[in-house]
Length: 342
Image (cartoon, rainbow, N blue to C red; front, top):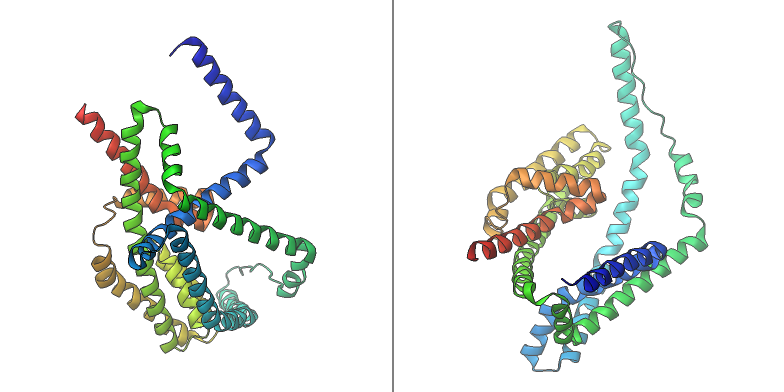
């Protein structure tokens, strides 16, 4: 590379780093919008293609139809599920004082047993629910700030959908511009990487979402049979956490068992057994039939990916750990194949 071109590249990198540092909030907003728009385009592309081929309509109309169908599905789900979900979440919150009171009384009985044996008593941290509830308004920063956050989030979501619409409408031009950004020497390799990553992640997400929906429905039904209140909300929580390998079923079962424990120990044991039966059904029949050996990731790699994702972004990082690991594996596989071919 010529010295002048190398110097210009270094200056461009330094200028980009300086702009990113000085206007990092604006840069982060731009990155979020681009990621949101790209995600919307990625998710709605198959639906818009189906409308375009099935009804022989134009691209713009097919995109609008896909957006309209998604809005109708979300609205119908909200009308059907939101009232019982809100009611059941209210039940969970109202049952919290009774649950903590039960735990405290059992802990006091345990301390009494320790004192009878001549052992030191254990201390339980104080939990004042009234103080926690009264501190919520200052924590939210006032009604105006909370409303402003809602408006800001809604605006960002709207802009992401608008950007996704334009990406879908002009996808050939957008893809061509992105392709031209890659140096010609690496363009073929980059296209192979994008294709491989797309195939891996799409197959995984479709299978995992279907499994999570089935597990959520089975868990809600099992908790209903066990007599657990708020079974619908708790079943959805179990289904969501089921997307996390190994740790997910345990994390998802904790709220359900705690809620059942507030109704008594027999209900909690029955709920735990029901969720255990659902997880066994999932691991033996559901997941193997839907996913098979789709990921092919080593268990050690899965554990490391989940741990790293958890340290970076908590629960969200754990949910994105496996797709990220699949993408990294696809990249290395393509690079290794290219190197072997040379």
